Image (cartoon, rainbow, N blue to C red; front, side, top):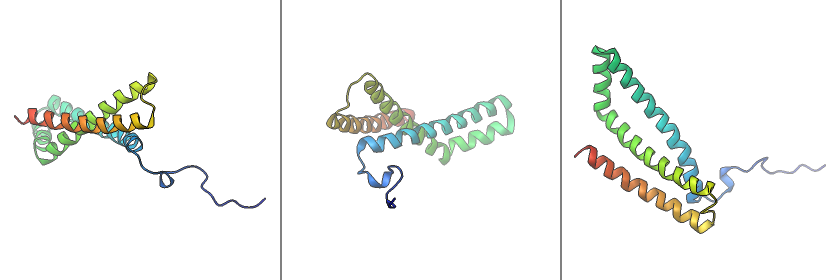
Length: 126
């Protein structure tokens, strides 16, 4: 039997990137980011329960530049994940599978997530 030189399974390198494909990857990444932010929240709660120096140290970190970066990343991750999750609920109900519709809802998800992130951060720092 002749040897066939082809990939054993499809991979990202052979596909043309689309908004839907990028949002699929981004949805997974934001899920991981939200899990890491949840760990930061748990750390802060444990520090608050412990009191004293540990709470002061954690609060100093979370109110500094790292905490600001974490808040911006968390809020962007939250709104992207939420918007894409709502999009998936419509897909689960059987709506929005057309290529043009999927592209438009993907772009809409990113735009709405960006706007909500900015509005949220403006509200936090107002």
